[in-house]
Length: 151
Image 1 (cartoon, rainbow, N blue to C red):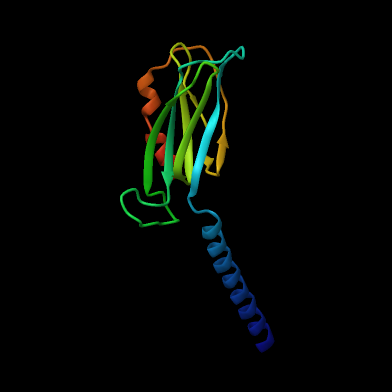
Image 2 (cartoon, rainbow, N blue to C red):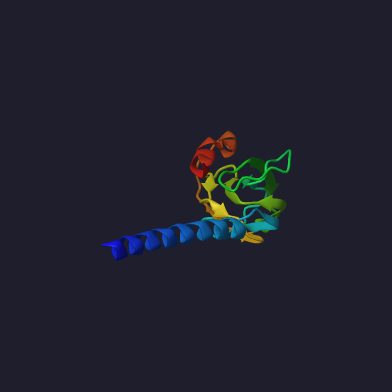
């Protein structure tokens, strides 16, 4: 009986140590990525480049925007960054730091397209194919549903 109790206690201690170590490793490998390049193409349904499309990046960081406080259990910094596509439908934006982002694209005469949530790395490539339809440009900046999904 005493041997079983010692074995159970040993297993519980091992589980606690493994959980603790995996938590530390997770925090060390998932900090805000720095100097991120976000790029991609925005095309129509027939593969034609969509020049002058509005690309909005909803960027979140573990670091608070106005100070050095960092909390790896929640996103403290939020930025909305905007860029446009060139004649080839290409967009590019350089970001100082990021942990997670979503991207939305708008072009008059097309439906707004949204990315899934993207964990940040040094280079994010995400292309969009827009379908013809009617969207309001104001819908492009509604980030409440994105923030709710991130928290």
